Image 1: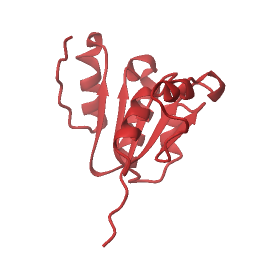
Image 2: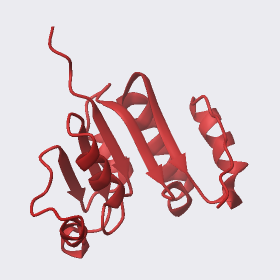
Image 3: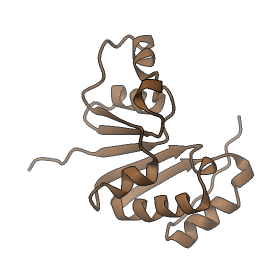
Image 4: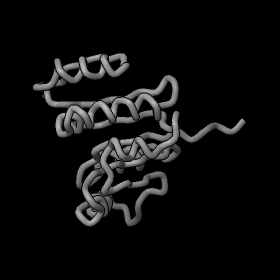
Length: 145
């Protein structure tokens, strides 16, 4: 029996796509998709790869530049992803965009999969309530440095 390859998506990866690159280099049997609203000519992911000693993009990493999180998710098939994460994305999009992202996450995550987000503490009460109302089971952990 052949095991299905896991697919992990990072929403709002930023200029260098550091999280997705680091994960792709570490977990070679998992496919990663880095989604970033900035257009590809503004990204610096190749610079980060060179800093990591890599000459090429990892074969298990796809970068979707110039695409917002909601637009990307809405173009995907149901039950497509094993895990989706975003770090400091939700605080930068409108309430309507967040609602679209939440709907599309629930549609595109495979049963038993998770969405993990890290946001600024200023939103510690608002976002969990929004996510619960959208249908997510929410666990909140405070992180301090």
